[in-house]
Image 1 (tube, rainbow, N blue to C red):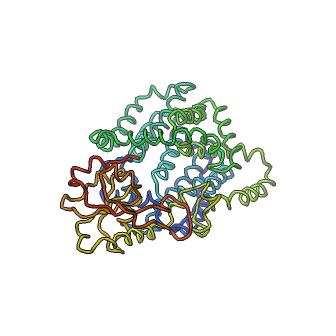
Image 2: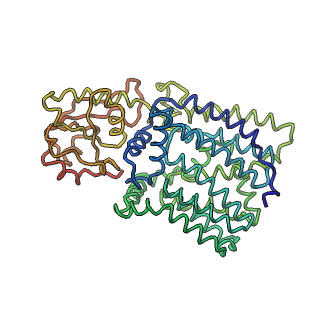
Image 3: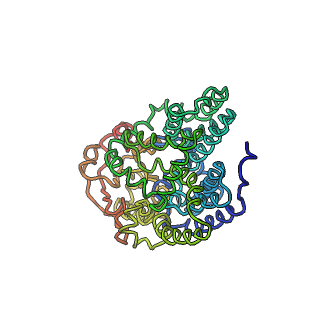
Amino acid sequence: MDEELPRFEGGLVGALVAVQVVVLTAFSGGYGFHRDELYFVAAGDRLAWGYVDQPPLTPLLARIAAEVFGSDPAGLRVIATLAGVLTVVLAAFIARELGGGRGPQLFAAATTALSAFVLLMSHMVSTNTMDMVIWLLIGLLAIRLLRTGDGRWWVPLGVVSGLGLTNKWLVFLLLFALGAAVLAVGPRAVFRSGWLAAGVGIAVVIAAPSFLWQAAHGFPLLTVAEGISQDDGTANRLTFVPLQLVYLSPMLVPVWIAGLVRLWRTPKLRAVALSYPVLCVVLLVLGGKPYYSVPLLILLTAAGAEPTLGWIDRRSRVIIAAVLAVAALPGSLLIGLPIVPASALAGPIMAMNKEQGEQVGWPEFTATVARAWEQIPPGQQSGAVIFTSNYGQAAAVERYGGNFGLPQPYSGHMSYYDWGPPSDAKTGPVLLVGFKEEAAARRGFRDCRVVAVHDNGIGLDNDEQGTRLALCARPPKPWSQLWPDLRVYY
């Protein structure tokens, strides 16, 4: 069936991708590591088949990037840049799969590259960065399967789905949405192919080690997901619909709606159109994050490229493209990339993308911890412990603490709990990072006094601005006995 498709415009798409790589690389150093990136690096140093809050793929990629390209933000983010490139190329391939020639392919690639969400995910390493690629590839393969009816496409679908499950279990929701949509509107014949069992088997084999790790540890990933839903579910539901309109760009809403309508009007691909509202309903019920559905919006935008260009006469296309670029590009760049000085982030940029602020000030934060640590008498420091309230703090101290002579930090948050308690020989003072007095008391720490309050020096109200550091007396019992009460999932 490939002969029926237009030629892939590798030259034009490649030129666009080259510009994308230059821009992303120029800003990859940015403000610094995001807290999640620091955590991925720490997890990558402790490779396992799973972690409390994620399967192993992203920490593994972080480990590879750090060893191959360097352990600074620019080196780590080569992985994110490559994911951004793949996302743009996949958008062009989706437009081609739907019969789009040069114009639709380039339109799909350009709008994807310039969208705020894709810029953000292409700048920093996260599980969502990998999901963006995996979901689009599943979408492309699903379109090919449904369009051709060739059951052999279940095999690559199984491979990609299995890889997706080693990155984030959200891919279950995508597969459910696609499967339910096909059952509802067809073509159901694809489920009668013997290749389906092969695809499922391959996915199970690939995902099995990660799944078995979760099973052996009581499925902590589900506990984390339940906690996120309980804490943020109401806010996620209230903001879900408005954010669908802005994550890519408000200007692209007519395009992805056109893609939705186009797929719905194509009998073999009607299920792909239906999968988006099905997914949205599932996320609203579960209280999932609004951005979980964005990869499907990218797919719909690619599907809408050809009808959108069909509405515009050739002479107007360049003018309209220029207007779109001028109107959308500055906002997307400001929201997605570290362009303005960190001191200028407060206001609309942080309101649209708080993750910008989470990339600011981690070396300075570690310096604050070091100043607090210095208040412990030198003779007691060998038996003292740094205990943080979250993984970002612990990972920052682990990353930058050597510059200040700080010891290995500990935390009960997420996988840091699994990475162990301090030795029971550590009977000295405890430096608590980020705990309020009541929380410290509930966990058994006594005689605590605040010895420092972190200030990033630029007045940026990110999550660590104003963090209190308290120096407490020796732990009330050995760390091995205290540890089970210190676990925090979210």
